[in-house]
Image (cartoon, rainbow, N blue to C red; front, side, top):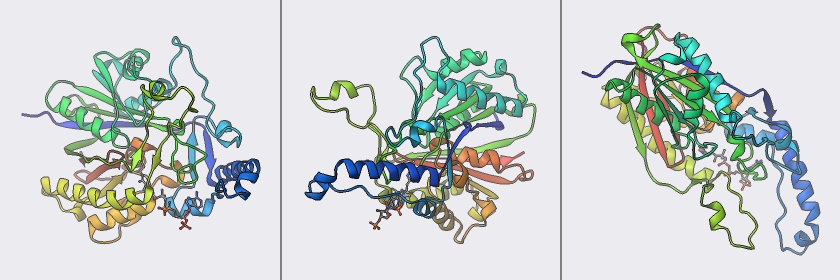
Length: 374
Ligand SMILES: CC(C)(COP(=O)(O)OP(=O)(O)OC[C@H]1O[C@@H](n2cnc3c(N)ncnc32)[C@H](O)[C@@H]1OP(=O)(O)O)[C@@H](O)C(=O)NCCC(=O)NCCS
């Protein structure tokens, strides 16, 4: 028989620097002024289209975002740079993703009342991993003093739910007793802050989740009743950065921008029905009614998208506490969004209450877990 698997701890690390919409827009608009001034002659001849200003009110209305946390603020806000300053570290220094991961893991383990020595697997799962190898998970294992093994994986914004599904199956089958899933998202590294369509979307953060065999758990948490994953190829959200980049460049071409880009309108239209069907199918698998679910911790990319998805799932508008939004404070934190919402909004649930965690994003990829308060 499968082991019972419980989530007993979560942790959240947000970097100390914060950028409001107004600050971000001021720097973007200064960049636009510089660009249009420098290219005045070409613009006047009709050879170049002038850049348009961004606006804080558009950002708030289109996305629900007011602020975002970032690893480094000055470089992003410098109109002559428009990207964070992240100092390269030597091979002997702790990597930046490892550093933020350890902070979130310590919190999650404290919450679960576990020591690092009791963890037998760590999975690093996030949209962007700092390097190909050695695995970030092995470095985290080393700095945390963990035993067993670890590995890195990415499924873009669904990295966390896919890793949670892996952890669930590893514990259910008896392969592991206690698994930590950790998600160090440095999204500011993949954003093109010169792109009006997407410069406002993301924020940096790290979440960590402890999953374990219920038999050895020291506190009650949320039992995982089931997991469900789906992928469907789409080019509408893409980032071409990879180890072949330098080989692909022509001798004389300027380096291309290997940043996040998307066709937001298409994503909006195509992903909503996929997520709606996915959630309803997952609930049907467990013979659950959508309105009997006490809380939906949804991926956080866009407030309008979340409101529409939950309306389609419930057949009515959701009350704010039924599908909490954290976008205003944290922005889109890639694979962490649904976990940030879970971390901040689960304490009031009562024994046997059922909730659903669901991510969606590039791929397209959708991952959900149905959990029950013990
Ligand atoms: C990105 C997103 C917020 C943009 O919202 P949108 O309403 O689709 O906005 P559009 O890009 O169609 O632009 C609408 C208008 O605002 C303008 N606009 C775009 N960016 C702007 C900005 N930063 N400031 C001011 N105006 C802006 C456009 O020029 C356009 O003007 P027009 O109507 O005169 O042509 C939205 O499409 C979205 O959230 N999509 C899903 C994204 C998602 O979930 N991605 C997953 C990533 S992990």
